[in-house]
Amino acid sequence: MLLEAIYHRPKSNYAYAYDENTIHIRVRTKRDDMDQVFLLYCDKYNLHETGFTKVEMKKIASDSLFDYYQAEAQPEYRRFAYLFQFIAGEENIAMNEVGFVADKEFDDASVLFATGLFEYPFLNAIDVNKPPQWVKDAIFYQIFPERFGNGDTSNDPENIEPWEEAAPERDNFFGGDLQGVIDHLDHLVELGINCIYFTPIFEATTNHKYDTVDYMKVDPHFGDNELAKTLVDKCHEKGIKVMLDAVFNHSGYFFGPFQDVVKNGESSKYKDWFYIREFPIVAEPKPNYHTFAFTGQMPKLNTEHPEVKSYLLEVARYWIEDIGCDGWRLDVANEVDHQFWREFRQVVKKANPEAYILGEIWHNSLPWLQGDQFDAVMNYPVTNSILEFFCKDAIDAEQFMGRLDSMLLAYPLQVNQTAFNLLDSHDTARLLTICNDDKQRMKLAATFQLTYMGAPCIYYGDEIGMTGGNDPDCRKPMVWNKEKQDLELFEYYKAMIKLRKEHRAFRDGSFTFLQAEKGSKHIVFERTDEHNRFVVVMNSGTEAVDVQLPGSFDVVNGNGTVDGEKVSVGALEYLILKAK
Image 1 (cartoon, rainbow, N blue to C red):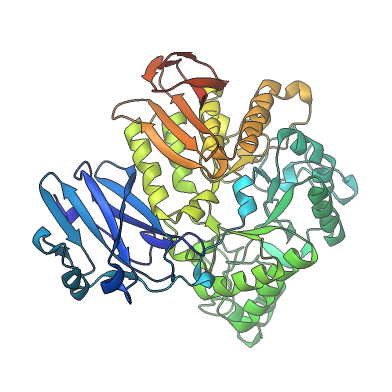
Image 2 (image 1 turned 180 degrees about the vertical axis):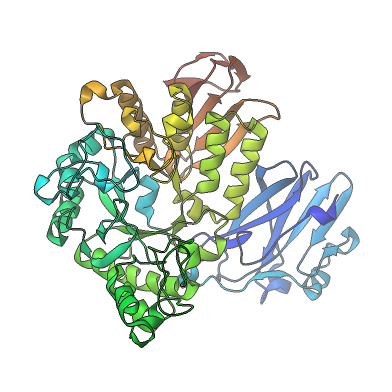
């Protein structure tokens, strides 16, 4: 045994409450080092009477260096003290909080107790991260409002570009609005969408609206607050939830309080709402105040200031409680203080306990996912892994498995089950363009996304074959002319979404890699619940592959053949199987 490779940390992603009764315990070992791993647990106040309960831990993931084991327990009194036992050949070692205990001492409970057990002191219900359960069933659709549909020409900006004809630029307008979304809700219903994620809809000067002027007001080019309420109500009537984009890290340059600072300088009553280094305000070429990146048009808000906090928390409440929205996506969430997010959660969950709070964080986000801040985060590490394996041919199957398994181990299970899984957005090139216009590779990426754990999000227009490079090219107006739409691709998305919605195994069932070898370009994984077991074979290589799958299966979707236990899948193809 390589003892140096063994790792566990209490009250973390290695030991957490899954729900109000269940604790998940994980431990890491060197890859292929153990024959068996056991969890031994007890009530610390009753150890000498009852002894330990012993459970064999299941290997749930592996990467190039380590194996990861997990077990769960439901302690009767919600108290939990524990240690681990590792067996490899003739070696038999226990590990508690102090360190390793030799096998000759292993059966002596008093020795183990005296040297210190790991503890989960008490399962307090209020501390459990409880994401809304509806998110497991969500199929998100991201809409960039200025480019989705122009339903009301009376509110168009001056000098708008002709829809579908002009190229998108960083500063031009096409006239999209909220009425345009209302007019096309039936398209989303037909596709199978049940939640819209809007980029900002609040008053701002740009086409993207991330430079907020008034957080309590819909941008006049999009409509008004009454129309926003109508949109939310009509979405709800059609079974579609609505998530808004909150830009609380920074405001826009023309936000009223910041304009007061520009005008009145150090005498402004709002000067402490922002991080001003010196007066007077200078925006170009480099701002003398903190901003988002170095963008002078986006001054950073001081969310520690009580007046700023009060204003923004009222914004958070208003759009959930009064307008009826179902969640917030939080822009640049990692640059805002944790205390603000704790209070934000309290306000939002009071307004609607089932509201979804989603953070935009591009790196490991565990500090925000302890149950006191966000429900989940945008799952960019998984996004990048999917793109590199299926679209860019940049990593092999073993690397792909290792990356995804490491992300599954990075967070509690309930966070992974409600993570936001996107493949492209207004910030990136479009999926088909990332795939070099190879529709088969695009389908592979989307198939994995739609059969993987977490809530998938489709960027508007991907379902009908829209292309586009990096911003601003990815922000083209939606193509509504059916003669210019890829209707075959639309039917593919429609069928895959239907499959996911019909089978709970794809939404919150267990996920396990069955095959993912070094140097290989194909993977096999299973999604399982108490009713069904699905096996998915995906080949991102340019040659056909044959795999052996013990058991009997029916073909559910995709292209390939099943001959007994032999499954054949062509180049850049996938096959979804259901166990008989």
